[in-house]
Structure formats: C-alpha cells, structure tokens
Amino acid sequence: QSVLTQPPSVSGAPGQRISISCTGNSSNIGAGYAVHWYQQLPGTAPKVLIHGNTNRPSGVPERFSGSKSGTSASLAITGLQAEDEADYYCQSYDSSLSGVVFGGGTKLTVL
Amino acid sequence: QVQLVQSGVDVKKPGASVKVSCKASGYVFSSFGITWVRQAPGQGLEWMGWISAHNGNTNYAQKLQGRVTMTADTYTSTAYMELRSLTSDDTAIYYCARALVVADWFDAWGQGTPVTVSS
Image (cartoon, rainbow over all chains, first blue to last red; front, side, top):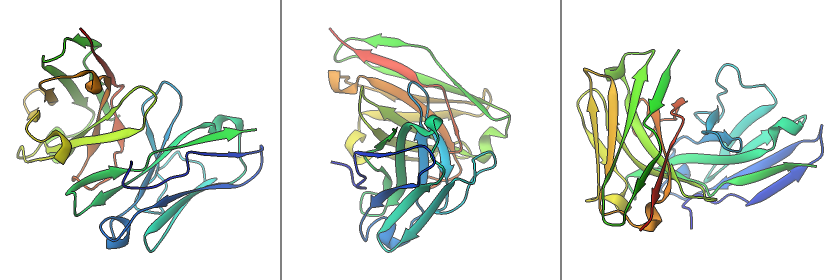
C-alpha cells in the first residue's frame, strides 16, 4: 500500500487528453511538500516529467502539465501519442515518515 | 552532461550483503546528494534513502534502517549503497539518482543495477 494513491491504469486514444491523479494527506502533499512526476518506459530508468508541482524540465514537451490542490496533485497529458505509453509515478516528501514517498504508479495505455 | 553509471548485475544468496556503486560525472559531485530507489519485479518505485555528497549526512527509509548504509567518496565521485541480511524480497533493480536535498526531485538517474537474491 503506497502512501500516495494513484489509479492503477488509465487509457486514451491518440490525440485525446488524459489525467492521472495522486492523492496524499496532511503529512505530505497537504503539508505543502512539492509533487514531482516521472515517466518510466519499459525496461528503462524513470525520467522526470514535472518537478515542483508544475515545472517542466527542458526537453519535456508542453503536452505534459502538472497541478496541485490541497492534498492532491494531477498530471495531464494532451494530444496523446503512442510513445506516451508508459508507467507514471508521483513523488513527494512525508513529514511523519521523514522520507520520500512514491505513488503506486499508473500504467498508461494508448488505444 | 550529467551521468550516473552504476555497477553491474549481481546475484547473492540469502543472508549475504550487496554493495552497489554509482559513479557520477558532468557536475560537481559534492554539490548534490544521491538518492537510492529500488523496484522489485513488476512493482513500483520504493525510496531507500539519500546521502549528501557534501558532508555524508544520510536519511534512510524507516523500513530499511539498520540494514542499509549509504556512503559517498568525493575523491572518486562515487556513491555506494550497501544492503545487508538479504532475503528474496530484496530482489530488485536498484537505481541511484541525483537530488539536491532529500525532498527534492531526481533530475538524473543511473541505468539501474539488477540484484537477485536466490539460494
């Protein structure tokens, strides 16, 4: 059971918009700690997509965006492409655990 | 460019220890920390801990306290993660990643080191 809760799977057709939620509590996201998002393609190391809730590193397409409100955060992908098919993870910090926490991961399928 | 290169595949017997290395290049090693993350087969990411390459301060996951030791050698720009008393539950890919502080994002990752624990 992960401290941050993500849906196990989401799907969408090419060109569509999807979003992935990440729900925490008052010890992590709700305490003001930043949320970061990673994409993991099969057989590869994770790669950061969004850091500090809403910031995109250089090289990450504008199709990827992040938001945060209260004890939750979301990753949105617009203009879905076949190459977006991957696992997505959210990450934050938890003050009661005094450590980093991850969501359980969401598998994105592009139909 | 920032690069983290990890040691290779390892196979251990239950009860043994494993030590994984992570050699950094392309930046000032002592200006950042290194975090360790593992991923069991077919599972999600699990944070193991973080070490400051500046002063060696560590922050370990509660679950692994007493079993894990992270070190950083500024002369060789290499971080190490040692895990003791291995069980089959420790079979995973172990990743190192760069993080400024413990709660920070991980902006560069190693390629991963598969570790199998089997009798």
